[in-house]
Image (cartoon, rainbow, N blue to C red):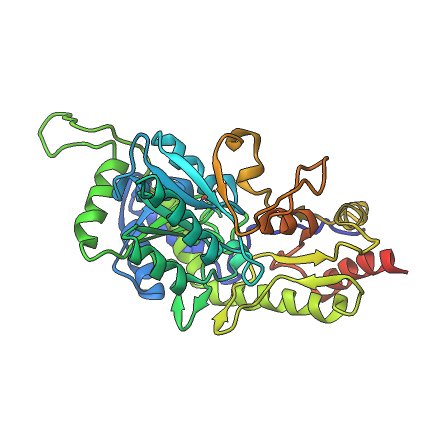
Length: 394
Ligand SMILES: *Cc1c(COP(=O)(O)O)cnc(C)c1O
């Protein structure tokens, strides 16, 4: 019987590292809330990635929320955010009653266009406004032009938050993503490159990292003041990671490099076995970057007779999971009122059904497909996927 092939599913270490850390937590009855696994997980992450401080939290979304609070985002503030992303990048802006302004992508990296970002700064400067923060994403593990984006943010003195939820293990010019922005965030959700069963981490890279990390710890533990009774002067959150969850995360971190290698192997396999099909192209691999290839994404040319939905349907019929590219935030009904800044001036609707437009992010959405990228896939599985796709070209 054929087995279901997942897009990306949890993959615990063959060595059982995760169980050992959990066992230790059980043996010491350090089940909750904090404990050694949490602090060690934070230390090990800083050791692996560089940067100053890390705070383990209940989700990547919580980490973005805390980053926004740490830079002082509040009611009515503007936050520039990459449009092509998962909604969790943008939702915390609204939690703080701030106003998202979405920025288009570029073809080179599929991530935030430095040109569009510059346009947005100029546009808002004209009305005497400046964003309180900028959120850039390394989508699917592809590096954004982070040095250029950082330079623009520095020029306008806007703090930079790097959403590295999908790019753990991705390296830009020798340095890990998540360590360039004032804040970086990682996710350990079940479908990410490593998972703690659910969780996230905030990387604090500011000069006052110690102070900022402590402030985040305070907010994330219900804003409890150091008094003998329960004393609160601010609104708090229950955002800390548990010691059990951190144990799984520690075990997974040990196999991160292995997972990245396998993800890259999967991407190369698709390039090799599908690359000759007319109309297919692959997600960009910017120079001097090392991509974790979290998901392998392909694009179909506008004039390609095979459409993304044909591929997704063919795969589904073979019990293989695939997915459309993230629908850009500026095209989401919930954000319909928000401003969107693009270097593409005259935009039109490309597809009435899904709502894709002719912005760069809209085109990537309209023509892209996330291929199964599960690290447990065998060569036979990969062969099966490629066979199902190739049939459409016969
Ligand atoms: C997964 C993801 C998040 C949110 O992480 P959670 O841990 O699921 O809250 C944020 N941004 C991007 C780009 C993601 O893919």
